[in-house]
Length: 357
View 1 (cartoon, rainbow, N blue to C red):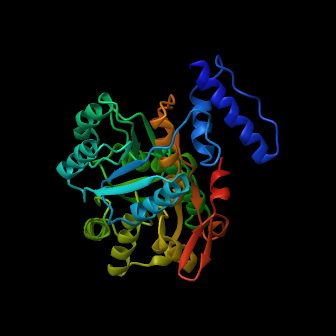
View 2: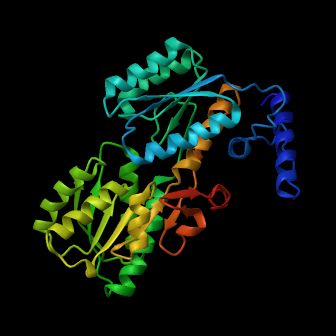
C-alpha cells in the first residue's frame, strides 16, 4: 500500500475510535492488509472520507432479478446509502436474462458511470464481460455471487450461514421430533452460492444428528411457484419428510404451501428458510407455525455495504476479495432485535446488524 493509502486508513481508524469511544490501534503501511480494507469499507463515513478521496457521481447496479423481494429491499438500501453520499444511483434489471445482464454492463460502460455493482445471472458466462469492464478501468463490485473480474464480492458466507441454521434445525429436531430428520432440500444448483447454502445446511444438521437424511434435493429455481411444483412431486414420493429447507424464503414458503396442499400434518414439520428479506418470512415467523427459522441476510444493510464498496473501489483502494456481510439465524424470539415493526413495514436496525459476529 502506498504511504498515502496508509495514512488515509489511519485517519479512518481514528474517526472510528471517536465514534465508538474506544481506542483502536492505528494501521501502518506495513500492517495494512485485507482485514484493514474490510474495516474501512464497513465503517466508511460519507461525512468524513479519507483525505484525497472523491465521491463517484454515478453508480449503476445490474441486477439479476428485481422482481424478487430480496433485491427490492437491497436496492432500497443502496438508494438510501447513495443519497447519503450524494451519488446518482441507477438500476438495470436483467430479469434473469443473461444477455440482458451483459448488455446492461455494456450500457453502463457506454454511459460512463463511475462504478458498477453487478449481480450475475450466470457466474461463469458473465466473467468475460466483467473482465473486459475492469480491464478498461471500470470499478466493478460483485453482489451475491462471485464472478471473475470483479474487484470484490459483497455477500454473506453462504456455507456458514447454511451451517448455522442446520445446527439450529438439528437441535430443534432433537428436542421436538425425537431426533428424526428427513429433509426435502429445495435448492438452486445453477449458482455456487446457493449450492453452498444447501451443503452448509446438511453439514450443520448432521453435526447434531449424524443420521439425518436429505431424502431428496430439487431445483426450485429460487421461485415460489416453481418450488411449489417440484416440492409437490417430491412430497408425493416422500410423505414422511419432516424438515423442509429452502435456499431462499420463496423456496421455503413454496415448500410449505405444497406440504399443506398435500394434506400432511404441519405439527410434525419444521421449515427452514434463507434470507428473511421481506414481509412474508417475518409474518411466517411471528405466526408461530412450522416456519421457525431463517438465515437472516439483512438486504438493506448489505445495500449499504455495496455502495461503500463502490466508493472505495472508485478511489482505487485495495479491496479484499470478499467483504462478508453479516448473517444469523432469525427466529420469532430475536426478530425484534434486528427489525422494528411500524404498521405493515419492518424497519431495519443497522446498529444491531453491524454488531453480529
